[in-house]
Length: 350
Image (cartoon, rainbow, N blue to C red; front, side, top):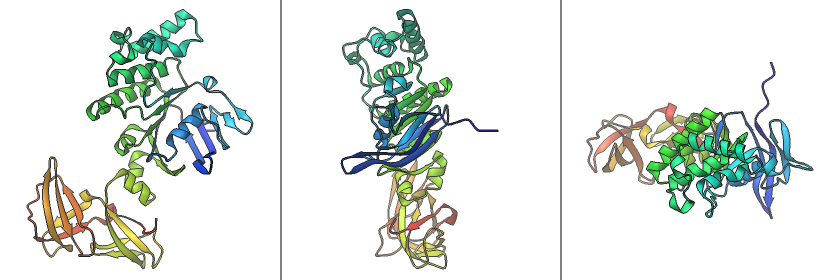
């Protein structure tokens, strides 16, 4: 049985600005109803990719397809208004001189008045913003502006919704609540979503799939758990988590470090490697068990305790974090170990 074609497909998309490749051979498939997070540091090409999908920017090479039809490619460019794609900007881009109702109606201008108002009332009801309809943007809180921008983007019933850092302007506590509510509604509606974020936690928690970008190309793609637990590069590992790093050289398939020997499948024989260990994956042991370490300091950080230790004078301190109460003191000699299954090893030059 033939599998359905992807809702969105990008084939080796490249976009250059002068001598800089903002996108370089980006290929991607997104299934209908999937929520995909584009993650990466500023300048990696996330927003440019959204603009290419929306039709606001043209690729220099490659092709973009929606529902199996080429919308950008050699000699082809379907204008944004004919792609059935909604775009929610980072700053929401609400019209300051229009009421909430008129902002929502703006994208429905091609419909008859009665149908447009019916659509507007429907999405206003779904987002529970009836009480805001006569207000203007300057009278709204950040969370309210976000909901109005979402209503305007969803009112035309787009096949695909593009969201550029949609929650970044909200305070942390409000951001989490609004994100959960918004994505819950989008899942309920079955909307396909491509969402840009530079926040690692948001990328891991919000998307069915995460696409990590670096310097205009896709570094790694998969579920949040796959990228967090099995990053394919040092860049991917460090984007999603803090690590202790220990240098060593690969001998007979292992890297030797002051913390112990660890399998090094991705490091060539004789090559320098870096062992990556998360602070929560280091365990303090009684003296004489594991590697020998010396406690530098000990801090209580709310739900976790943090201990810094040294295992070699020429190396930076290692950080240990635990939810258990740790009874140690500065200068104390202790043992230290790490589960080899939780350790990552990458070439030192990666």
